[in-house]
Amino acid sequence: MEQQQTYTLKEIVSTLGRIDAEDSDSARISRQVRHWTIHGLLNPAQRHTGRGRDRRYAAHEIRKAAIYLELTRYGMTVGSLKDVGDWLDMLEREKSPPWEFAKAGRFRIYFEVTWGLTGGHLAIVSVHPDDVPAAKRAAKDQKAYVITASVGRLDQANNPRVGAYSSVFINATRLFSAIDV
Image 1 (cartoon, rainbow, N blue to C red):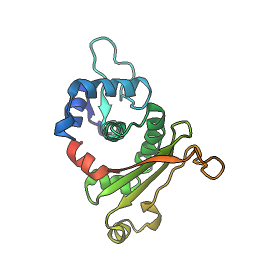
Image 2 (image 1 turned 60 degrees about the vertical axis):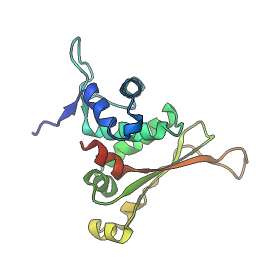
Image 3 (image 1 turned 90 degrees about the vertical axis):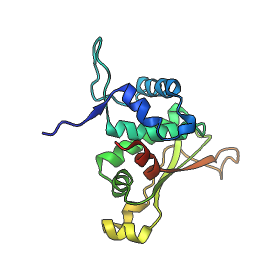
Image 4 (image 1 turned 120 degrees about the vertical axis):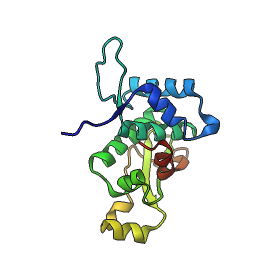
């Protein structure tokens, strides 16, 4: 069985710093990665590292961290990021074609994240390729390109103060190309 490459915290910070040269504060990124690990948003490949041994993270965890880093710029909380992380884990586990395309840089894949006053949870996540016909031909699976996961309820009809108040599109292909793991 092939050994999966893993990365130390220092390597992750250096990698994530390549996403945005203007916002590459390594101390802040390091704190965020530790914070996300403590809250279970990132899972080290080795749980119990022991004294003097660095935690090591798989490439998938670095991709999640890149998306978390982008979402925190827009004020998304740890509670909401947990739902996003669960969804990203599902995409990786199921080898979702859009997820694989974003990793390979084959199409521009965007994640749409919308959240509201429903306990700060993720409400909608979608994947949108720029070239839907070509993406459909490549995967031969029409349903692979609009993936929606709902958590919580955005019930605007029954309570006008509740509903989506923010929506962000993330260019996953750009992020993954920048980190190149």
